[in-house]
Image (cartoon, rainbow, N blue to C red; front, side, top):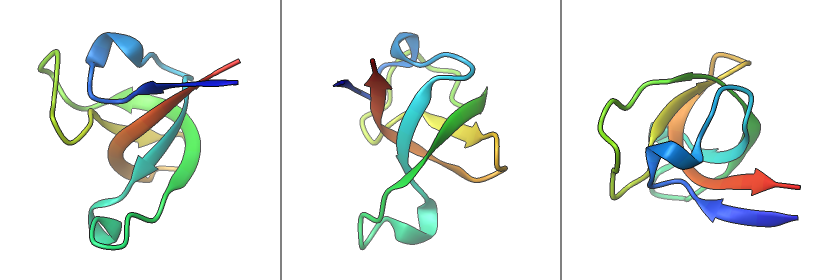
Amino acid sequence: MDKITGTIRENIHIESEVEIVQKNHQRTGEITHGFVKRILTKSPKHTHGIKVQLETGVVGRVKWVIEE
């Protein structure tokens, strides 16, 4: 299992398995795991991670994309 950085939009696709940090967890860095439902960031790159919504409805910035 490999991890790819979440700062580049083209690395992330609908249903990608990801690890995100929610806005209210930025200070602690607490990770939330899930699958992408929507990609919210329009730009090709973002230094803090591409913002996504998970299938659970949680929104956060992608730290890692999980690849099998």
